[in-house]
Length: 457
Ligand code: F0G
Image (cartoon, rainbow, N blue to C red; front, side, top):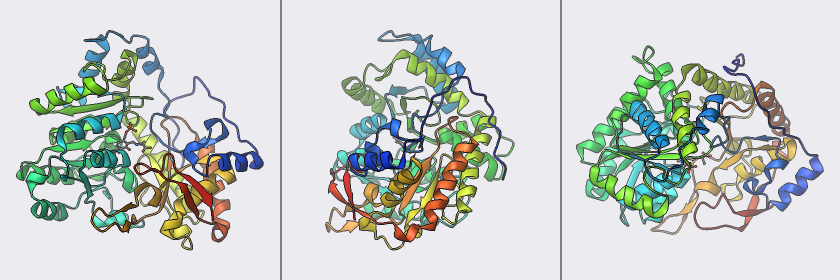
């Protein structure tokens, strides 16, 4: 496939450099073999995350200059409120400093110890925020999500039969709310179909369970629906978003993804009582409800970015850039989670390194090698992130897939950067059998991938 010409041109540049192999070896050693602990200046191409790393537009930067920094009732808040109502149809919302702050407040308001929160797949911070309140996050994605080679067009879908059975088993009274993540980041950036979203909403509502969407990459999901689902080709992404959010009782969102800002989040609900609790909790932890831990200028950048993230010329380029990288990587013989997701390519480290067992972290081995070989930073999404002791038996539960995610910052890297990433992986693929795993020298209890330290085996 051809690389899509970017629907923008570059007005400002940020220099990057590739340090020598010897310097990279020293840097990763000093970082305890955890790419999160590297200094960004020692990285050439940073695909650690697409979160807060995108390039804002000239319009967003100029909107920032109009930020109203009033403590309460700032004009910036009302401009954001207008965008939120137009796109999501919600009047009751608060800004938060990022997605996990919204998750924390939602969990504080709704989750009681021992309760369950189902989703297709929770992202790590959502999972941890629910656990931090004594709750139990449950993943009920369709089986195809566990098969990296499956070409299912909506691999982020929830398994409705499993969801019904689960509600029947634990009882609706033990489920304070249900969720779905669009797109499904933890499962490969895969979209959820509108038909499935409708079935999810119906299933939750039939049992009186409120339905919340984790909307981090909702715009990419909307564009996948337009491309792949019957009946949506002629609808605009805005219309599709309106239809999607009309199904929900609320949503939490990291604005650092599809709203293309460097910081920010949203939390919305239709429930008045819950909204009051959310505002009280927000005041305690984030700030007054009209700024929620952000500066007025951040709210303005978000108000503009929300619409830019839905722009169809941008989304066509975005999804094709990701697909292009996927195709180039596939050609090296490295398997990826198929089909390419919206925001990232997920390398199947488990398949590339079958000689490294779960407990020796094949994903981490590949992430470290990518840095050593090419100064590229990706992120393990496997046993380091998701393995956890079963609360009943204490036995280690490992995730199905050992992946390395290459997340693509929005509007930031060009074709030659993508080509370089694929060429680097091509070199690693040739000597995959010589790669070794690693072991922890330090691991915190929750969200351990961020601060753990390792030793190569
Ligand atoms: N939900 C999803 C689906 C996410 O991907 C993230 C963040 C969050 C919630 C939390 O948002 O970072 O603003 O607090 N994902 C980033 C990533 C960190 O790299 O995938 P946050």
